Length: 517
Image: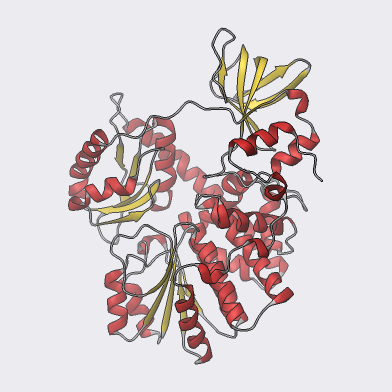
């Protein structure tokens, strides 16, 4: 029986976990729900199965981000295993987001019988109607918020990312075609690596089945023999046999995959995953790394311009238009503006194809971008996404009206006040040993729904380290932590620990009363 450190037990108890042993155990596919419990799976699997048996021409139509590319790869691999020869299409970012009428006409000319849209399509009512008129069936696999639901067979859930849903559909397809036992589990294991990366990259809640799937996938990544994935892990500082942390996925691996759709073409991801030789897979992983370095340079230059546009009298929300910025970095710039100024932010760029402004928004806790965009729909051309991240298209001349309506909505529906950080458990630094770190890593993956634990450490002394870091000492023990605000002091520290890094999130002076956990 595992001897769990009492601070870890306190964290689990604080989060309502009753069976610590069960929480710590390595999950298997038996811990996942049946894929047929996901709404729409049975009908979709029946239609895809019929297309495979009839040798219909199938096209998988994805998206240009990490989730879209990896969910497309999951479905492509599954259809090939079942004997189909699917075409795949990932749009360039300049083509615009989602299932479009232009795409429908393209597939009609190529003789497509069935289009499977993944990570888009649920709101593509017009293009789906056009596809039906042209004799093309459409199946939708999507997790975005529904605005104008398309009339098509669909697997929709906001509990998974698109890659997670793609894996569940693949699982059901495999079972329906008689694949079971070890063969099924081996194939699902290979797909779970991609679903785990996408689940963390797309910021879906890491709870329930998504947490189980992500945990399985991260363990499989540690053992991967795919030379391209292994090269991405190496470049991200993940040692062979080491289970990558959610932080390593979110800030090192996912950006390299996302870079293809931001400054190159998302098809580069599929090329890397499906290349025939290890040498080609490694070379294509290096291409993704080079694209990511280009993305970082473009972001750095644009961020300087963005910061100069923000006035001292900060509004309740930001809508910034930089016609010269590259479309692929709009979402990153919105994130940087949100982080720097603490308000919801949209960054818009010029779309040469349509002459309109397109962009991405990022929100703060307690404020739904989708609700705000619904209130602004009279001046918008189109929008979609999630509460915390959304995309928008607006005529350039309507940007001032969009800004005015967005700020008015914010003033009427301000974000909920950010609560002061609270500790999950008390900790003595003498407890921070190898066993503690190993058990802390077992709480992974951290993210929405399962945040990095915060520990309260009393009677500490903080002293400056190199820029951006401090040393937090208690008794004779000292650990290095990230910190942008504190350089020295003493009292009680609130430390966020995830097994690989520590961050000092708050300091409470000795004279201040301490809140209870």
